[in-house]
Image (tube, rainbow, N blue to C red):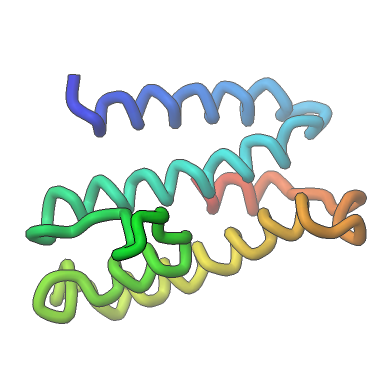
Length: 126
C-alpha cells in the first residue's frame, strides 16, 4: 500500500467519528481537529512526491512546523507546486492556517473550551 492509501484510511476513520456525532455533535471537535492532522500529512506527501529533495526536517534536525509546511506548499518547486492553481492554493492554505490556529487554541488556552464546532465548519475542514 502507498502512503496515500494509508492516509485515505485515516480520513475514513475521521469521517466515521464525524458521522457518529451527527445527532448530538459530541465528536465534531475531534473530527475537526483530526482534519488538521490529515491536511499536514497530505501536504507532506504532496511535497515529497513533487519537490525534489524536500524534507520535513529543518537543518538542525527538528521537524518543520505546520506554518513552515504551508509556506513550502505555497512556494513549491520553482515558485509553485501547481502554477495554474497558485491563487487557489494560497486561498486554501490561508483557510487551513486559520483552522490550525483555532485547533491549537483548543489545547493552549482555556478560553475556547466551550467553543462549538458546527457541522458546516467540520465538513469544510474535510
